[in-house]
Image 1 (cartoon, rainbow, N blue to C red):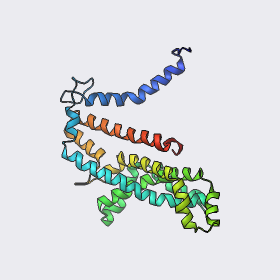
Image 2 (cartoon, rainbow, N blue to C red):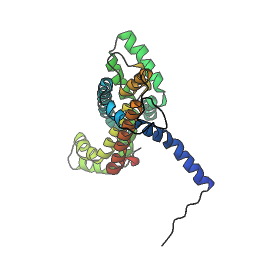
Image 3 (cartoon, helix red, strand yellow):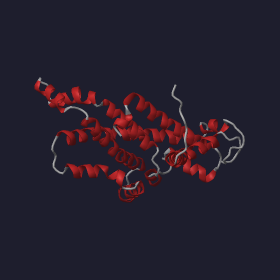
Image 4 (cartoon, rainbow, N blue to C red):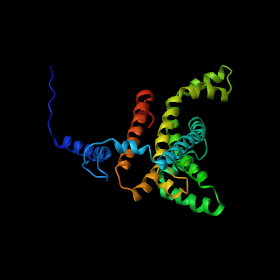
Length: 263
């Protein structure tokens, strides 16, 4: 029987240092969330679940969680409604200035989120009186759109175009072929794009900071405001719950959809 031997080489040492650098802060936050003390500290002062339970009793957390969910789900759905046709057009037709369009669509990812939030606040909310909720929704949709286009385009690139052409030759209209042949075959990519967009929107901070107002705050922004007043382990507990939620969603997407094939 083959025996596994562990040897510490310079390469493996660097690997373990990188892993510790990436996972270490997360493990510290998780440990702090189970602290029995009244202040956020590490190492934890005893072990307790009281801060995990307290997260669900804070009214502002519940309200901002609902706001973040609405923004993440609604913004991602709208981004997909725009991104799927755009990806299809760029993948199937020779459009003029296609590369320019791709660059424009990718702009929200390239440009820092602070600039996007400041621009919407300065040129839409203040001058024309756009409701802050609408501006926040548009910002989240714009930030998610590049991910929708990228993931759906990758899925379309793996789909043979002659399948669609065969459906057209057999009497199906171009629109009918799209709904009966293309969409069913790229549903895994669309679901992966939705999950990636949802996680990105839900955890968005810079844009939401500029576009938050009275009664309209996303959960990450509300957590920042809470820490300015109270410095207890409930923030660590909430951060741990959100991290496990995001990891669970991504792991399930990888297990059932092959998430890594599209991103």
